[in-house]
Figure (tube, rainbow, N blue to C red):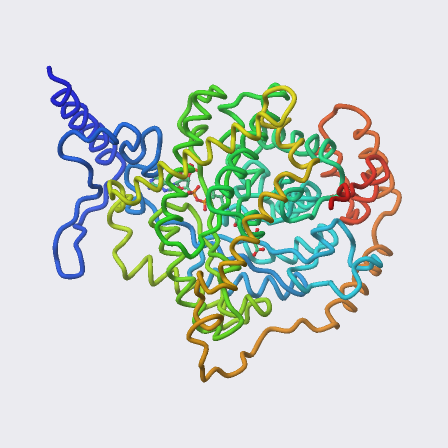
Length: 560
Ligand SMILES: CC(C)(COP(=O)(O)OP(=O)(O)OC[C@H]1O[C@@H](n2cnc3c(N)ncnc32)[C@H](O)[C@@H]1OP(=O)(O)O)[C@@H](O)C(=O)NCCC(=O)NCCSC(=O)CCC(=O)O
């Protein structure tokens, strides 16, 4: 057979393979048509030889460029998962019920700054911050209230927290126990991504080593006890929001992911058992096609490295599943109603890139936490895309576009070049050692800062145009009604906390904290004693203070 015909035969064989999997998975009757009535296929691909196709493949097949499932969103649409939290647990619980009632598919918890830093609401560091940028959680009783009336066995719940991720996870497990939900039945995601804290977001508690030990404990516990749970959501969002380019976001995030894979392997865990617990989180910025290419490249790179470098054999261990949030930094305080349009375009990019889960920002998020009305518009934006635009009918509809495939290849190549740099920075050829060195030397930060500076310069010179900011500035805008958090929240939270401290069995709390400290001095898994501390109503601050006493805190080396 001449080479061209050999390739045609491959294309046909690939299509038949995909078709068989699609037919086996997709039972729903009915046709899919454009608005004006043309019938559409579930997927499109080359009819004859295309040398690029080996890199691209069919949906549901290695290297998963075109998505994880042969049926795409026909089989299951993405999860509408709106990040929310403010004030106290009761107020946030009401918002969750609104989100679920309005068609949200899962929950996503935003914590306030004291919680993110492992401090109680009555800690002097917390003054003025309680309940402001998210919900205040001091102990498992707050978790009970947060999910009151929400069956934790049925709703997948994401919690965005990294420094004190593990104690917060323990409180969530305890809240589920109190609802009567067996731990093994839980499904959700915990951010836990400490690498990106050092690289971009800066909310760590300790130096990297103890954090990595705790994360290793968590990965081990989850792989054994809660197979569906994703104990890590490796995050590019904060790297991008700090000013990185798309290629840096892609490369730094996947490198961090490889770091966690190496952590799991170094603990002797089976990659096929723990890798499905690694999930990802990306930004959907405003450059529509570049973002779509980024998501497609991410899936392909991850699958290849997982198979070829780390030896993952199962599909689930090769899958890159990701959540997307539209770009907060693309929103403007000027003419804020335009933010609805920006968010819709970015959300569409995430969907065309095959996101598994999506948060759409509210138009007022540049000024404050979303008001109820703005939160509803944000959620409805996803529903308009999902229900009205028919984009869910075809898997990876931009696959094969010369532009998108070229951008996908280019981003992949840029990411590979960055991986090489990171590995070369380390001392032993692992990604982890390169990442730790890059953190210590401020390399990631300076790369991001340079990209952010370059962007800012373009903006100021007018090379990059933003409507309402440096062009088309005339407007008839009226001030927005924004959500304000009353100081009463803090006063009340502190009062309730004092009352709770008085009512609990203090001896049980002391014993649980002592057991936790003792475990930290051994190589035992720390999750079981931390669960006991949460059950005894030890507070987040008390648990973190016990660990701070053992491990100290971390300050970034000064840099000029
Ligand atoms: C994996 C993800 C990404 C998504 O999980 P989900 O449960 O929503 O979706 P999923 O896994 O894709 O799908 C659920 C199940 O349906 C299956 N499924 C999906 N599509 C299918 C299809 N077409 N055919 C057959 N099965 C299908 C999946 O395999 C899975 O089952 P199986 O499991 O059996 O395979 C998870 O980690 C997640 O929800 N992450 C959210 C993270 C988040 O919300 N972060 C907020 C950060 S906010 C932040 O950081 C703040 C930023 C700021 O500062 O503003």
